[in-house]
Length: 317
Image (cartoon, rainbow, N blue to C red; front, side, top):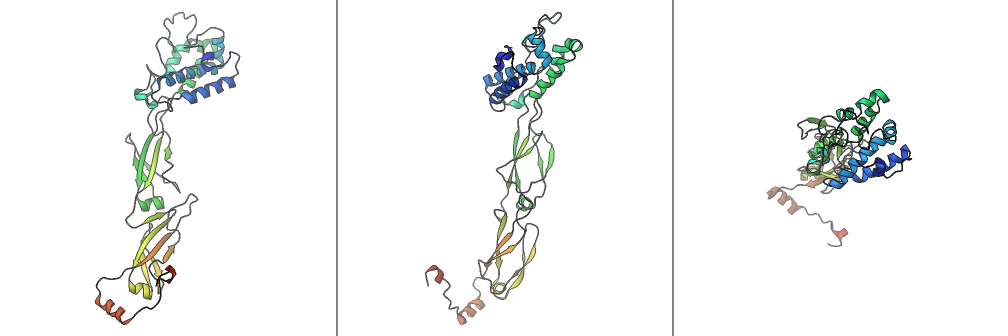
């Protein structure tokens, strides 16, 4: 590995804060999750991670500055160490490039990361108070997490409005019960931590986009629900109590005498759940449904004529 100070672009007298700041900038620009398939970016990220790991541990940094270990973490005078078991000698703490450029496939090669760093710093633990353990833990923490996995789930209309929990089966075969949040929107996927692809730094997340399935007679209007409610001529003229479907089950609604098509009746609290836990309304638009070819009705309208100019407001007779 290159000199860690050169890799991070900091002087040897740099403070811990300056080292951390330099590393974060490089890691952000070159992280595998943001640069899938870019081998140069991946190599830069790995170099910076290893450099930061070495320099962020005060004991390991001091040993490097004194010349006791090299930039790869190998003892400078390795009696019995031979070809090295650190970052050099062909060992790559990230196990090489990810398959297909996906950060979720990075795996530690040749066993657990703790074994790798125990091999590097096993002797120094007894003589220097255990600097290598922090180094290994830091490398585990900085290893890339597995990839997030995206899902889409169509929620039945009534169940979306009433926030009925949904069951979803993940790619790994695990089945979970998903509690719908108030005011959920398809534009903002729900994140389930640790339910994505496995990775050396831990599993990624599951991102679940919820879609509200269409309904055969309900229509969503913001947080409200609209419904065309058919009534007979008798019910419209004389008034009546009629049964109305809602997402919570049927209820009885009073139609006032003399109601006409287009009149909207409101049932409060029968719509979609808002973010504050309150609910929208059901808006039922009356539609007077006349029978076809009814001789008695035609005979009645022949005897009775409505002389009102009902289209006057439209500018026509």
